Structure formats: C-alpha cells, structure tokens
Length: 229
Image (cartoon, rainbow, N blue to C red):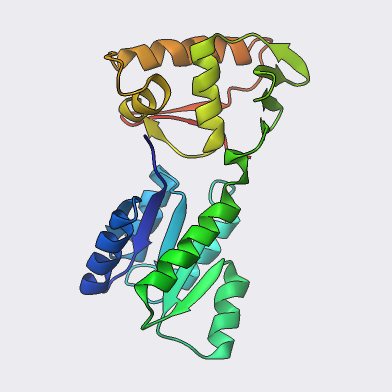
C-alpha cells in the first residue's frame, strides 16, 4: 500500500543520510536530494506529501525555493518543514512568512522532527477521513458511493470508483501503474499494468461526458494523477 512520500532537500550528506534512515524506519517513502534546483525539478515532476527543506543549499536556496513553491498551484499547499542553523527570531519569522509550515533549528532531535512531521501530515490530509471528496466541479460521496460532475450524477463502475477515490485522496500526486495496482486492486490480484490504462480510459469517458475538462493527467513514462485544486 502507498505510504506518505517525503522529499528531503539537504546538502549535508551525513544529515541527509540520517534523515533518510530515520524517516524510512517510520514507514515513509523517502527521497533525498542535495541541491535546491534538483529539489525544484523533482517537485515539478511529482509532488510529495511533505518537503523537508534546508534553508541554505547550492543551486537555489531553501528560502527562495519555498517562495517559488507557494506561488505554484500544484505546490501551494505542500507541507514544508524548514531546517536551518539560523536560530534568531528574525530568521524564524522570515522562514514562516515565506511559507514554511514549521521551522526547526539545527541541531535538533530526531524524535522531535518525526513528531512534527506527523503533525504536519495529519493537518495536511483531512480529506483522508472526509465523507466527501471534491476537486473543482467533481465530487465523490463516500457514504453514498456516488460521483457527481457539475452537480449531475455520473455513473462509474466499482473499480473506476475506487480508482477515482484513491486519486482524489492525493490530488496532484503522480502514481505509477504499479502503485495504482497495489493500492486499488490489491497485491493479492495478479493483473497486468495495462489494465490500469483500460480503467483510466473508462473513468475519463464517464467523468468527462459532455465535454467537461479532463481532470485526469497522464504523465508520460510515469503514470497518472488528478488535477490539484
């Protein structure tokens, strides 16, 4: 099953490795990059569930990257935990004012970092427990197992419903066909990855009837995502 994906942007190699192993031990899917421009490229390809961002990095500084991310619709709500050696009040204020959700001064304890990350992820994913999921004019009612587009009911099959529900739980995040198979079909089912393409096609046909805008995005060579709010 899919777990939360955390991107760590930290140019200190030993600290990056420490973050990787500790967060992976907590069950997160972790990726570490050492440059700000590399982090920006990764974020344009695939939006994680949370970004751990060092203030000072080569390429693009953490504070500048934070500004850029907050200006983009796809990453405007991305939870950002900023790490820095700058502990003065003015620096903390600047970091938070730029868009960081939390701020931790080095050196810090790993248990505190993990606890803060858990809290950020809980606040960032209320939709995981919501009875109704909504993206633009598309609405999915979990209690009634019904889908609406622009206020009109949309018929989708059981598998397409589960696929849509899963994508709507993680708006903007790109999932590979293998990840979708594991999370929607379950790892007990032996299914070819091309099956995902077939069901995505059916889902598109259902929710885009009447020439509505296509909310499902195909990322060539990677997989699928649903439009971010």
